[in-house]
Each structure stands twice: as structure tokens, then as C-alpha cells.
Image (tube, rainbow, N blue to C red; front, side):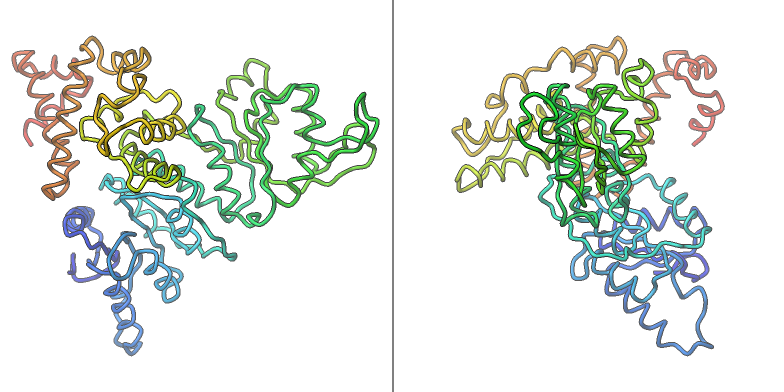
Length: 491
């Protein structure tokens, strides 16, 4: 299907008719010429037909200026399409869409030359802005010059915008060797991300060495990192190589870097700056060909302000920062993660079939605080696999710390809704979840836009009712402009 003067510029391919409908409306509204495809093979056939045309009969509008493609499609997948498309049209930017983000797809898309990787459901206005940027900017993106293999063993996947951003960053970093700083609460998967960064890099076949600076006494940490010579100190009866030498050519993961003593921070800074170091008690320079990935659950910028962490080291480590979101901020991923961990637990524990949660039990899990984050979720799935007598896991089978909201969860919920009781706040959110599920199951197009309109109607309507239709007072109470209310009422 063509749109806008039959001058296809943006080529869109998605097997989902409702997605094509949403994009059709958005592209028309944005005045972007476009062409729609329902199958990846149709795209390749259209490109082939263009190439077979005599040069004098070709129309510029018949060639894509940008390809917007889904990843999961029958017949020709988005990954296969990207690979073949880039062979024919290497200079055309490609934006990939997915409803199921995982490390495999994120790394593969960037390595094969994709310009961007976005999640469904997407904000149509933001997507149109992104497409216009690519159309206005000449593409300089080229596929990675080296081949690397990504795996799905990391357990890094989901549908939430937060985890998608993590995967997108890993994919972009796969062709680089720059230092990375990982931040996030305990149990969010910082070491998993560090291993993913290593295993998707050109250093993948070299050592990955991990050390927790918080787990080693301060007086032993220097020797642990840099090694020592025989007789360097009492008890040093033999020479020993340190973790920097063990990781030579590969990656050194420094976990809980915020706990490193200040004097060792100075030594580490020199290694990062000059690429050399001395073993403890030694006088021979040792070359350090190591990529550093550091991690901390602490706010390092705050520790710098407190004088507990060197500012110059912080900036050396934080070339690219990746924040791992807590599980409570990615509740839409919990069902996917639990099914994954329950399957793994069944396999590891020799059970024929994996446990599955009732809808009510899953809702409890999605509301839980998860202080231990993904690590706690994995442990709970193993506990359920052993302790639940039936194949179906109900609410009463869940551990007490998951089933009963913690004080932290109650405080968080109270803060988010002001004086509204927690039970009432959770009630309207449950109703919203049910409405979203029903719309998705019914195949309703543009779910976000429709629900957003309904939300605004309810909120503005109640505010006007409360102020006896006084728009200025309603605007002040809602924290929006009076003109906004007037426009919304008119709409």
C-alpha cells in the first residue's frame, strides 16, 4: 500500500495489521511518504524489481530512504531481512521494532548494520521524530567489521523500556572496547551485563576475570589486583600474578568499585591512564592490555562529592554508564522472567514440566517489591519448583515476603498517590491493567492513544465537576495550562 502521492520514502514491514494501521495514520499525519509491506520477502522483491528496472525509468521515490521493520515475522524474519537488505542497500538506515527484547536480537541488529532498535508499544510521535532525524541526516552507519556471536544464556530480555535501553546500549558497545560503569541495586544483574559486554566484544575469546573489591580485605586487595614478587611482604613466599595479568587481552570486571580504598584508586587510575603497573615489591613495569568494566550499587557521584571516591577515576571509568533498573520498575517483564526461571528450575531439578502461576498469583508477583531484584526472583522460582505440590502455583503458594507487601512497597505506593489509601491506589491500577489486557486481546489498534484519551477525559471531567466548571481553577489543581483544558474539552 502506498501513501502520500505514491512516493514511497519510508518502507514499513510488519506482519501485524494493527501495527501497520497505527503507522499508516502516524506517517500520514507526519507528512512522510511511505510504503507498507506485510512480509519481509515483499521488501526484498520490491528492491529486486527496482534493481531490474532500466536506469532511465527509475523514479527516486521508488527506492527506500529508510526501512522500519519488525523483528519477529513469519517466513522472512526481521533479522534475515536486515542481513539481506543491507547487502542490497547498505547506505539505507534501518530501524528495527520488537515486542520481545533480548540480548541476541539487540546485538545482532547493530552488528548487521541497524541504525536503531526500539520497543513496542512505541510512542508514535517520538517514532516519527526519530524517522525524520534519519531522513534528514546522511547515514554513515556501516555493519561491524568483525563477527561476534551473541547468546541468550545471559537471561537479559524483557518488554520494558528500561531493559530495552540496557540491551540497546550493549548492542552499540559490541564493536568497541571502551570502559563501562554499571550501576544498580544488588541483584539487578550487573555481572550478567559485564559478561554480555565481554562475550559480544572482540575480546570474547580472551579471559573474563571478575573480582569484588568489597569481598577482599583492603591490605590484600593491592596484591590481588596487581600481583606481588617473592618476599614483597611477610608470607609472600612465592611470586604471584594478579588479576590484571590474568585478564590480559580480555576483560577485568571490578565489582563494588565504590568500596576501593583511596590509595588503590590512585594506582588504578595510573593503570587506566598509562596502561602499565608494578607488581607489589617489583620494579619491572607490566603492560596491562585489559578492558575495565566496573560496577557499584552506590551512587559514585555522591561518593565523589563526599571525598570518598576520586573524581578523575570516576570519569575514567564512566566513559559509558549503564544503569540496571530495579525489578519493581519493570513489572511488565516479571511474567516473562518467571516463566523463564521456572523452566530453568524444572530442567535443573529434573522435573518433567515447569510450574505455572495463576493470574492472581502473577498479579501479586507484579506488585511485590523484590528487594533482591532478579536474583531474588530466580531464587523464588526455584523455591516454588520444589515446594509447590501442584503444577499450578496459586497466591497461597507464594513465599510470605512476596505475598505480603513490605514497608518499602507501602511507602512507595503512598508517595505515588498522595493521601489516597494504598488499597484504593492499587485498585485503579488493577482496573487499568485489565482494560489494557482486554484491548490487547481484542486486537484494538492504538491502545495507548485510546486509553490516554479516556484517561484525560476522566481526569479533566472530574476536575471540572469539582470546580463547578471553572477551567482556571481546574487547570491549577491539575497542574496544567488553562488553554490545554480548553483544547481538550473542544476535542
